[in-house]
Image (cartoon, rainbow, N blue to C red):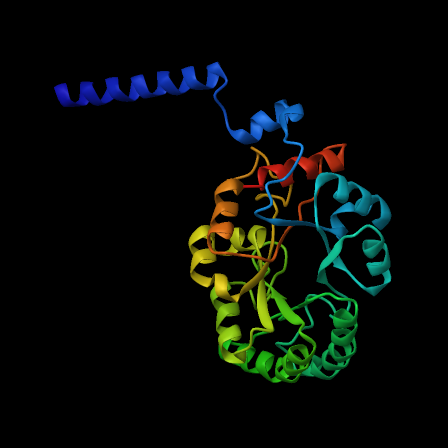
Length: 297
């Protein structure tokens, strides 16, 4: 009985202590930055190459996004094709993840029926990426469509191998994105970092790597920091996004991004980390600025 009473007393004291901490305003760094936006530093630390995904800001022009990105200290814009590269160059911004060769997210290299079209598209795009002075070009496995892992890997190798050779010639990296198959992209095959890492091993080239989308991988497998540390040699690029809902990176989300960013810096990542969340606040650029500073470690 005495032991139970001691337990109850300890729990009561812990709860009281928690309440006192909350009441005193000792809260997460996310909430502090939300409440005190004027406390954001004027400059970034320089340990991370920050980028932002174009598609999340469809309410403004590429020109406007470039101006805002430069003001924040962002270095690159993700997921833009040749038509927008002149605008990025005008503002001294890098096309950190080029696109425009893919068919879509579902019809990818995992299906032989799409190889001819994909090989034509990428054979034309790889030299354009290189000529523009860029490096990363996105690609996708596509949907599983009943294929087991072995068939998917074999199909991807067959479709990608000649393109990887072309990428090596032009110093371009084909980067396959990891997408969740649970919520957003049902049946997508490259939905685990281990699946993508195995494909990297089979292709055996530094010119084929992965885009580790933190939002997607938190949904499908979690264990984000350990997976980054274990597979970082196969990862060329990162995307962010708050879970649930791919919303702002703040105290409504289940991941603590500063710890993830420290892990990315810790493995020696020299590529880009791109913000890819859907702004919900009226001031989208203020949301972007806050997210970049939260991720700047």
